[in-house]
Length: 434
Image (cartoon, rainbow, N blue to C red; front, side, top):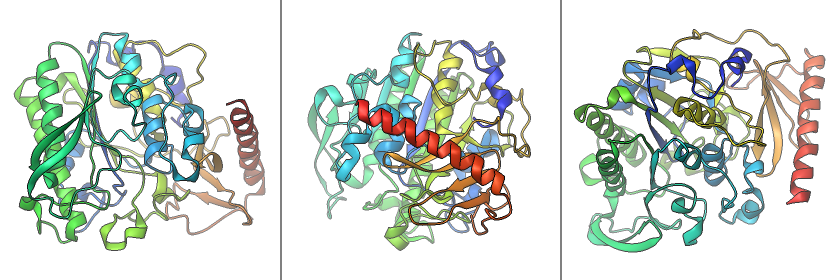
């Protein structure tokens, strides 16, 4: 978390929310959803009333970044609270081979287990295919998903057998393949109802709106943005079902729900891909459009409605946040780069823009595969791409990264370049010792 003040608020059992004993936690992740793809983030034609309602009843983050430039890297980082290179995932990512999260990696589910949480993972796992590499080998009591190479068939509206993974076993289910997200949502809801007597952690990772996709028949043509927009509308409905069920069974005020995307939109898909809004770049880019994603936090009775948080935060902050809320200790010997957002969620720290360019603010690094090519500190972001001049942006005022001010602020360029070079040297050592 960028504001230095939050570093002072991190601790086991965050006092900011001490009246809530081990809240339930639901983490919803969309696949390749862009920063500009929701109506509450400015999309002119895709209607997302349920997610908009989350924002109206909770907190919308305008500078939330993920820590990986693609699906596997981002999810490994999200679940471990570490940069992708520190999760051990990097070597398998070479040559576009699907990554495997090492068995020694400590996930959110494993940390929460210390406080008697039960955890369920539903949807895309992306972090291994062998039985011991699946979610149940990484702290989750239940896993319902599908093989990593799953793609809806051309006749996906037909009720034909679909291979699912339940726990570590493959099973066949017969239902329209275009309803796969709804099936995952229903599995998550069943888990929530069955687990409501204990604190629970649900990781719901949708397949959509990643291309290729199949739109549920009852959502086709519901947006003005083609199949992609229809998929986003379908996701919105699933989010609405989940929030509604939490209210129905009377645990909404005991449950923190986070909705986010795993990375920026796949701009190569053109009309079948998403939008980064006014941001530059998309998936696989070190620009803001590749890393900055929509993120909304919902917690009735705790988060003040219609709060907009404009300071930089990242997916690296979620693991410390969840651990702190649960009163769980972070593993010793691990240097977590993120900080707890509990003071933000509870309103102890008021929102606003980060105007202090202090060099004491923690830095955030932008990676492509195993190399850091950009760093953000306060309002400043330096991009160092091979064979290109350094590009310096004041992303608070220039989120589209249109105007480099490197020539105007050479001292800041020098400082941030040093941070990147030090980080690269550290990473080289990490790779050599793996």
